[in-house]
Figure 1 (tube, rainbow, N blue to C red):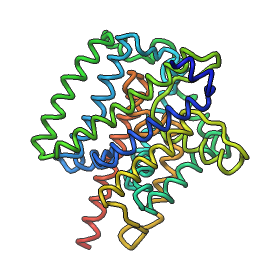
Figure 2 (cartoon, rainbow, N blue to C red):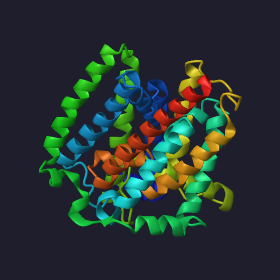
Figure 3 (cartoon, rainbow, N blue to C red):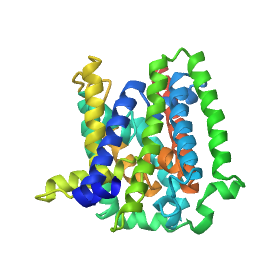
Length: 353
């Protein structure tokens, strides 16, 4: 059936459709679950385990379990995925991850959260997300590219060293089993923190969307006569591709990423409208634009250094056990927690001055 679709529609249209479908699931589920890495780091920084952390853990463990199970069942082969096949940058993962973590705290959301919020009427998220996209493009091919390349070259890792599973002595079924147990623990935690069942189910579907992206692009690549990259949900790169295509091309050549971005936007917007949660939100005295813009710059450059955003590197890359992705998401957590505590200290000092 897939071969017939590829012959009839062609690879670009099939990839675009797969990306849009994955994006619809992700956008709807992320909006309903309030999935947000920054919110989870706030809870940890404040010294308690709450509902936001439980949601993030449900997403991560679901994506990890389903992706590793798909590999074990021969439904997916990620050896050619960029996060494992290409030479990776540990220096980029560390420095970029730290920068991204600081940036998402200042901007009150990571790249995926900004896209989800912008579809619900949040103009702060829309403007900040556009700045993230522009800085990411400048870091990839523009004026910031030389700096990114120099930092990336400081510490490289390649070959089997990028695959964390064999490094730890674990096969795919073992990783899937461990993730399954962790998922049960995350669901119990969510229940104990009075997270509504609907939110937990939505969080599971965010993880499902990540595994869905991996399986869909692999299936298309396996049946295509053209070279099709195997990838899943990520936002910084696809957002820049989508923006550049819209502003510089007369016709847009579809791919998974270009289908993903509008899919997420439509899914999130529809979810907010149906739940009567759509409303315009602007910058104000308590939400200064300069803080958001500073965060956007750090996230745009940091994501390109780290090899992806909080979802692209942290969840999608983490789900295939990429060493650089796990390093990047750890550093995102670290950068965010330190920043939250520093801001809290500055606020406390200002209040007593």
